[in-house]
Amino acid sequence: QLQLQESGSGLVKPSQTLSLTCAVSGGSISSGGYSWNWIRQPPGKGLEWIGYIYHSGSTYYNPSLKSRVTISVDRSKNQFSLKLSSVTAADTAVYYCARDQQYFDYWGQGTLVTVSS
Amino acid sequence: AIQLTQSPSSLSASVGDRVTITCRASQGISSALAWYQQKPGKAPKLLIYDASSLKSGVPSRFSGSGSGTDFTLTISSLQPEDFATYYCQQFNSYPHTFGGGTKVEIK
Image (cartoon, rainbow over all chains, first blue to last red):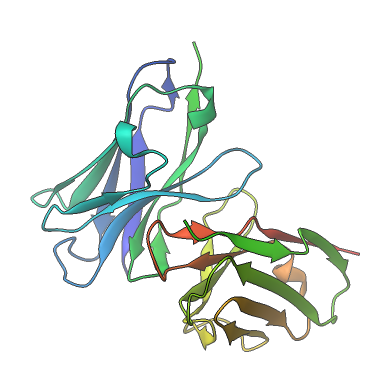
């Protein structure tokens, strides 16, 4: 059974960079046909797709966040990562990682990141 | 980006009721639509993909229909464990987008 687990800093200061990692177990991130995604959900609000990466390293980001987002993959550790720069309070959210085969069939449990000084 | 508009944003229903949630896309997306259920403090759970395909293990009281711009999620007989928020998501084009959600509450 595939499992995804987010980890990283839960508190980030304004203007700094948010960094999260998603560890994948029960399957290989190098399996073809899937992309590996980040999605976020501000408290009490809806879902926003951030971007994806394939095992090859190719990426696609939501244009609304593109200038601040970097997603990378570490195939040796079977994990992928998110960096979001120049954060503000509006970036406070639960961040999820998820596998995508067009729709999101496996999700991590989510991790709350709060942007505050 | 394709916008998805869900209605209603919330509803109150009783156990055993038939519940229908709609999702309208700002442009045609063929059948590239999925439905998710989310309970408080939990990640969304995939229910339906390709507009009408039921994910393995999901109860058959859940069904999806539609194509193009108009889609429906139906719960044929609401059960206590179905009280949650439901989201539609389009995967016809990037950026993938979600509807605003429909909260199903107990009447």
